[in-house]
Image (cartoon, rainbow over all chains, first blue to last red; front, side, top):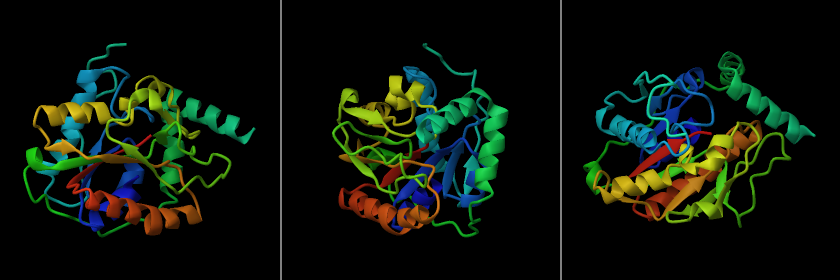
Amino acid sequence: MGLIQRELERAGLVTAGISNLRQYTRRVNPPRTLFLDWPLGQPLGRPFALEQQRAVLLALLETITTTETPGQVREPGWAWLDGIDLE
Amino acid sequence: MARWKNRLLARLLARFPFLARRVTDSWARQVVVNREVPWTPLAKPLPRCRVALVTTAGVHRRDQEPFDMRDPQGDPGFREIADHTPAAELMITHDYYDHRAADRDLNVVFPWQRLAELAREGIIGQSAPFHYGFMGHLLGGHLQTLVRVSAPEVARRLLAQGVDVVLLTPG
């Protein structure tokens, strides 16, 4: 995913991506990243957990207004069990 | 048979995080390290930006050709998804991660409905008319196709729609 992100940024778009793979992201080096140490396949959180999904999306947008160093990874440190689970 | 094995592996990785870390770190070691980072500065405030989604979670419309799961190197193409496409018209084709949660609620990997809410609240200017689905887990020559053909074509389409910001989500 980071490879696509880099090409979009190179073309003149402002990009931010979610990562659940720390080592992969370090090597690919995309411009702005929100890292969540969560299971693969649920980057926005749990199904129908609207507030959790919204919080992740807002945090991702925040990387756009707060990242000053290209390649910086923002880590809110949210544990998988945190957040609102409406299941 | 190969597809069944990949799906089983995907479920095991979702169930056992320590195993997932070991396997994904081994994938990471095959990736070329990039030192330079491309950078486009934000030119206007987010409430005036048009925002698109790009996901590598294998999301596509049901009437589009599914991502190719027979090719062990994956499918380097992309699928264009109109912003207001109803959930019932979308699906995931991707054998390399456990997408049972995302099958129930696509916002888990493709938050197009959450993005529309942020647009209505004025937190962003608007959602883009089209978003783009890819599949992750590409190997071999398909990575070059992705970087040299598919990603630049999607960039061209996004710029033509007046998109300012792209949010990328994995599977």
